[in-house]
Image (cartoon, rainbow, N blue to C red; front, side, top):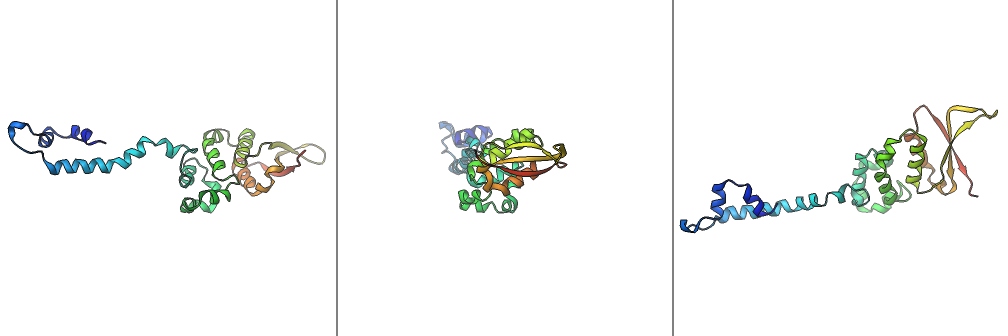
Length: 196
């Protein structure tokens, strides 16, 4: 807030003290002027943040050290496990520390945060699980099929998640995502699909 804007909010007697009429023969109140200058200076950092608030809450533009906090708002903090307790770790070396959460580093994390509303909308569905897996790993080609027994009958409430070969090194992440995003009553198995 600029000094002139603050002055407009003051009662008329204070405004007169800042700019007394010439016929009064008084000098402007320097102490009040200094106080208003200090108020303007103190408000400036806050106003800078408010003027660019979108850069803090937009997952694609936020600082890497802010991503874990933002993911907590979006119910994605379960991806961090025990790392969520140490956000300072991200501030030190975000790309390094993100890589052990998501192999694509903060880029994958940013994409997950950006897609959080849609992922939440489709949570517990085949569409939601496939979108989550592809966004988190950056590898397309996941598929979900019904499990079959030895007589080729569908096994109720058991699914097979076909994992593309490019995502094989991310198996622990995939397991964590499937456990969190599938319906609780559904069991699953992962099956690696060889590249053709």
